[in-house]
Amino acid sequence: MNTPKGFSLEENEKPIWYGRMSWKANWFLILLAILTIWPFGLGIIFLILGLLRILSTEYFVSTKRIFIRYGLFKKTVWQIRNEWVSSYLISQSFFGKLFNYGRIWISTPGYFSGVTIIKDVSNPIFFKTILDPLLITYSLK
Image (cartoon, rainbow, N blue to C red; front, top):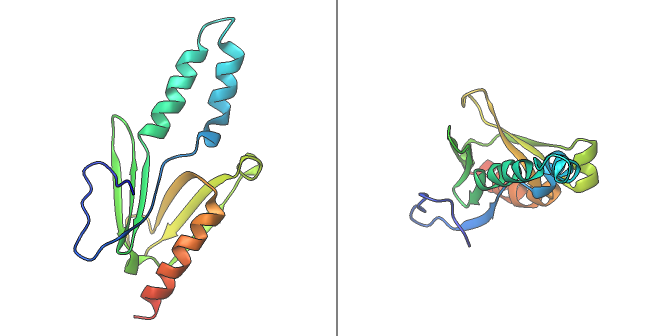
């Protein structure tokens, strides 16, 4: 399984899931690319922007923590220990439901703003099957 660049696993830590921002979440950039490829040649720029958004976003869940990295020029990185996660919320817009992508809002007590967002992940309902066992494991301790 892949791990984010520069990320090292701790002792007894096992990877559970690795992902990136969904291509489907960039539907608007893809639409702009299609509409402007012939008349203006700008379509290539919109496709490159979408590709950069995807390549500069990484998500990783292990048995001990959740890792989130955004940004190409200005990097933002969050590492949340699984025992700090108090709850999560899955949200999908109309197009998110249509194309099966969404956001996962992870609540942690006293951590930055109290909420960390995993943006535009494919199949967010599947992500629930990953988070539920982790929450149960740490709530029983």
